[in-house]
Length: 260
Ligand SMILES: NC(=O)c1ccc[n+]([C@@H]2O[C@H](COP(=O)([O-])OP(=O)(O)OC[C@H]3O[C@@H](n4cnc5c(N)ncnc54)[C@H](O)[C@@H]3O)[C@@H](O)[C@H]2O)c1
Image (cartoon, rainbow, N blue to C red; front, side, top):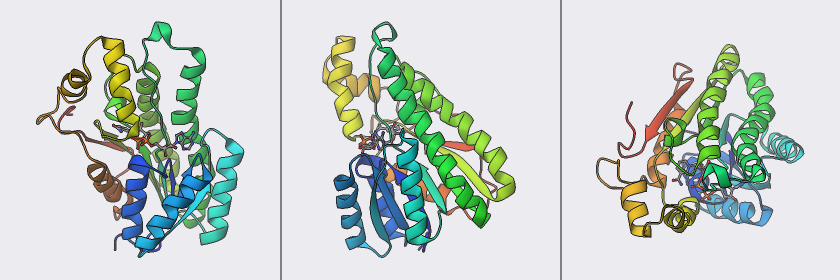
């Protein structure tokens, strides 16, 4: 087991990619805090994962834009399990619209969930990692941390911003034994993406099939969606890496949609 007894705090973990990472980490022996907007959803996921074992999970209500909720849930995890080894800052949403129609409220909401959420969870977890002189922080970026698409201005802005945060955390955390890295997935068929298909079709005036084939997968090498399991493999690699040589990095997992 690669994460035996590691204590992990995962945001947006009740469903989608966050749930997939949590499930695999429990399978690798970790103790996983499943943090999400709704307590019942987080608890239901945690219960399922604990039943699978051999690690365990516990559900926490934490809107990542709410400093008090983040701090309270991190404190509760530390009280329950004694510390934090790994943070997966994963919670995210998508809103698609041309810039001239993007409401300022939606812009601020997007930046709050993706960037404030990453900052607040990092700030809450770092002191516990510094106390152990070790820690791994993983931000869920995107191919949109590297390039832009139309209709996604705040998403692209926020995902680029996570690259800067990861590098800053690497610099500050390095002397304390803490590393920070970014995963950059291509399109993964989760509710976040399912919701976008009809929205993009409408905004671009094309069919849903064209959105999938041209907009989402047109630049991949094989026309395939990235899967949750693909992203999970990268998360496990960053989390279980045996030293802090791997820090301030980003890894794209996108069927070759973007290469660097
Ligand atoms: N699906 C993709 O194609 C894709 C590609 C690249 C990056 N990502 C990123 O992966 C992450 C997870 O996306 P997903 O596809 O699993 O989405 P999803 O919609 O399936 O799951 C997102 C989870 O985050 C939770 N969440 C939303 N707002 C929150 C908040 N304020 N506080 C706490 N939890 C909140 C939701 O309740 C949900 O459980 C996001 O950061 C997303 O930008 C997704």
